[in-house]
Image 1 (cartoon, one colour):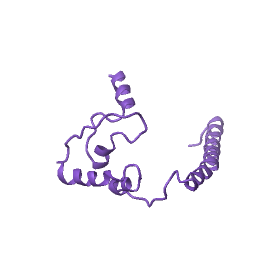
Image 2 (cartoon, rainbow, N blue to C red; image 1 turned 180 degrees about the vertical axis):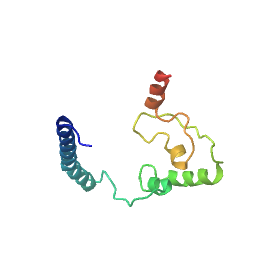
Image 3 (cartoon, helix red, strand yellow; image 1 turned 90 degrees about the vertical axis):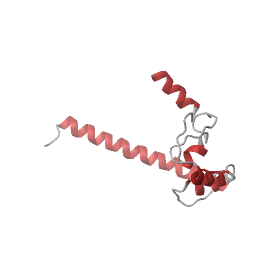
Image 4 (cartoon, rainbow, N blue to C red; image 1 turned 120 degrees about the vertical axis):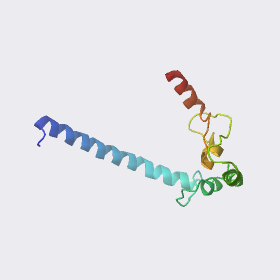
Length: 118
């Protein structure tokens, strides 16, 4: 099945826009990431899906790695862990979520936006 001429034009335009936006993002993001690493704003870290390993390499939260390990060993699966809600896009709710447990409050912004919907 061939697309009509307008459809082919639209598809080419969309793919061109996608490729251009990818290039623009890479052009600005890569130097910014390198600059952040040079000033010590980011730490080089190896890829890991282990949340304890992830939090251990964050200087601000490294003391919580032992807490996460303790929760994983001693809290039954499905138990909720209460933490004070934090603002959006922060590490609020991190202990419960990184330990693999439900977070009843989590981000303040998420909680209030969901309350408006319901």
